[in-house]
Image (cartoon, rainbow, N blue to C red; front, side):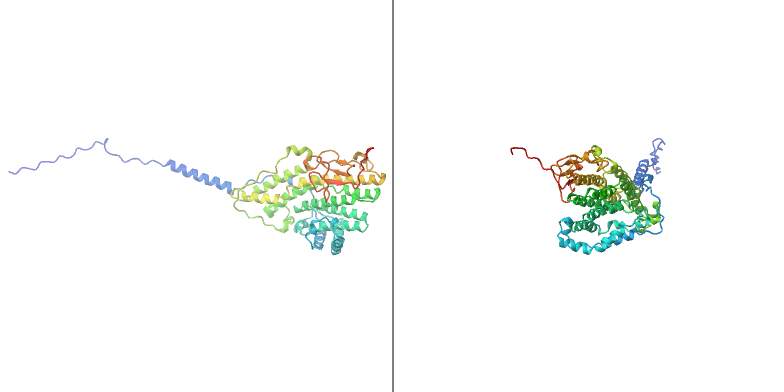
Length: 449
């Protein structure tokens, strides 16, 4: 009888405690945190590069002048006609020489070719209904006209021409015309270039006036008339500060156009649109750079040079930046625009020093005309020839007066007196602006020599 196959035993069931369990899923917190940090970094970077600063208050940079509501003014047209009428020198090398060193033939030719410009200048300076803050000045930037260097030479050549033809009183008055035109430009704040042109014209005025005074034969009474006019031509602190406020507002209008909040008829060249925004150029932050710089420059205008020399501070902050920085393009724009303005306060102080020297020379020459000898000291000029002898802004004291060597000089922007430094044209060295008196006291020779 066949046997049944052996029965196979089933494997015993595995206890639940030993059975392999599927691992539970864990939420990826680290991945989420990394993503959030990356997103926050993107937002932070975006805010740094794309979000501009909040507009800052700028009420202190406003122009404190009433709006000029005259329907029409003649000033812009007359200034434009004068500049257009100026004929330039055909010889560029001649333009590098002072007019008093020109040959008579060239001087005569230049003056004859500019007779219309001289007539236009008379009309311009004879316009007593002057409106320096009228909106019409914003329509065109005449401060950057190419004729300005030639116009300055023309006015100096006019003085030389009058001297050579024996009209010394008229020559001295013509020298003051340079200062009168400079004064008018000081009052104009519509374009930044007017302040620079004013300083250039004032320097030409004091240099040319000094040359006339050096060899003058006019009487004390004749000199006094011009001296009284010359006193009024001193560059004004308030006018230069107003020009710096005008520079800030000019840039504000260029950046924001009609959204700047300024009168629409004062927009530069009549352009109402604002500057388009772009990467690396933040308009509000860039405008803030101009505000900070203009405030610092305004303060420097009224600082006394000899008291401020130890506390000199850099203009604004160092803006040597890379183009890819958040406002790199804006900082470059600011640096390029402000570069021509940085030296205005220093040139203003030099203008005061030169003006003080020429005013003192007026009084010295008047005293010489009356007494046939030089005064022994500047204090002798008070009160008959000067109510007060002007001080040297670089020392806070009287200018250095050396009658033995026939010079009068300021210690200059290096604050050191080194005996004077005669230049041609006069007072060219900012470290020691110097005038020649035109006469020197002979040193007495000791007996036995």
